[in-house]
Length: 86
Image 1 (cartoon, rainbow, N blue to C red):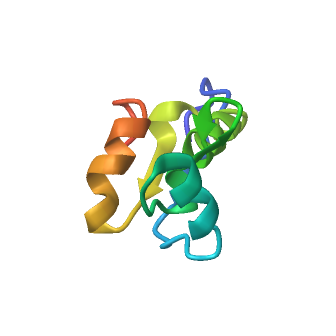
Image 2: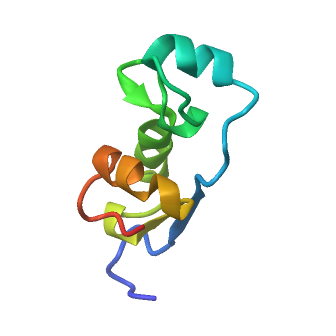
């Protein structure tokens, strides 16, 4: 741990679910079946983007890792900053 880093923690965001419980809502919003973490429900950001923004309180963006299902990788990459590894 670097003493000069004000946010030395890492954030791991688990975003691999299928989002079946909110499927009717996400289908209505996006016209397709989309897991809720990738849906734009409120505030102009997806739930994943909102989570990553909140995570910046504790760790720098380059210390955030997003875990997604392989078939959702492209969707996740389209929504996160290039510095966030998947």
